[in-house]
Image (cartoon, rainbow, N blue to C red; front, top):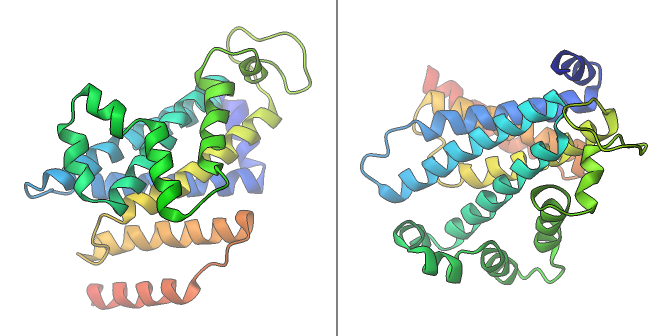
Length: 242
């Protein structure tokens, strides 16, 4: 099953783009999550959440290529929760300590997924509720036991629910697209907490993630890639290495 899935990805330019983005983000997280936090517990908290995201993305892709589409999508809901939590922390850094030291009641009161989404929407002035709809989709079709969720357990053309793995090109494409979008958000949010120019290796990893993400977003989301910034980063990297 995995060989067939990988062969399918390798034969599709768009799917390869999504996987390249996934790899660039995971390499970035891997590098910065392992840096010495020098006793900064807030930074270590962000790093530990990065380790969780890394494992989530690796697991989701593994389940995807093994033919377990519902399980892969369910794992992505956890990625979304951490992505939004990072967004909260970036806008209100004091909340990192409060989240880390909170008990269960406080987490439910302040940091539940719904409360975090509301804070972000209010802070950003978003009234469309897109974050909530995206989260609900993952709950309804993947994480919760619902009738709609069986769609990820049967071939896209219909038929019986599959017990065990199966290959379906359309389901693979749909889940991998969602995975790529969340990976892009995760990389952007995680990167906000770190000094990209601390050394040549840090800048090289950051430059690769930023460039891959920018090209992907321009191609698939219609967002213009900031090539001038890429060139500036490349120039700074060359100076660090000289």
